[in-house]
Length: 276
Image 1: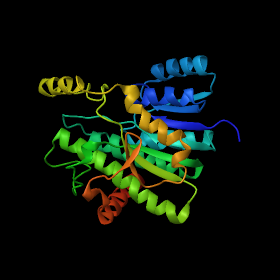
Image 2: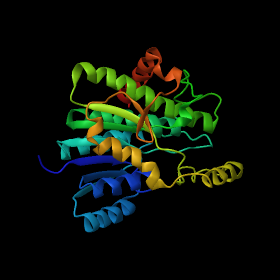
Image 3: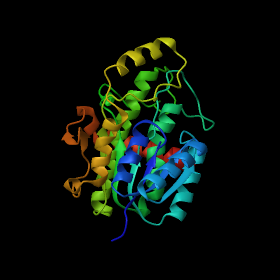
């Protein structure tokens, strides 16, 4: 059967880093994507030394649609078989930032990167797709101006992006049920994790609140456990289209099961992807 491999986005810090280490401990070869080539090179060297696995790395700013398309196509060419994909990259941007493609950066990174990476690599993925969402999706709403809100609130946009991760998971599952029944897709809440996800924000008030929350947060390794479970456990071999918390199936928000919103978001995402 051979050694399994896994592609992880946002792999050089926080939950992504600990997920990479956990999968290396399970003997998985790794395909790692992150912004920093230097951090990727150092991480790959450490993982290969410590766990005797093979690694490949790709530096990419996943908030750029152009870069995401380019790196996904390169990975598709270089890796004909990918056992597992973990869409993990994400951030909170409390100040409004617009990408070169005219998209709000939270939307571009937290949602569109999942959508594009997955769809481009779909034919190469053999087993599992895992999307890191969040309990923060509760209270989120997908508005018509989600791609670039007229009234921007950084925390609400983050909540909306995490809701989008769940819509994406559920709608992709409905497609796979009729087209690719051997492939599963699930999403998860990693927990309130002490990571650097908010460190790119200039707001002192937000940094203070974030620091206070982190006093009660779990470690990045604890936060990575559900991702690693969904990637490696035989218990979920035939489970798909489910939201997990602490490695257990859980009900997501009522609105997250609205199929019409999920389909509308899928259509919007496809249009953005194809227009670049």
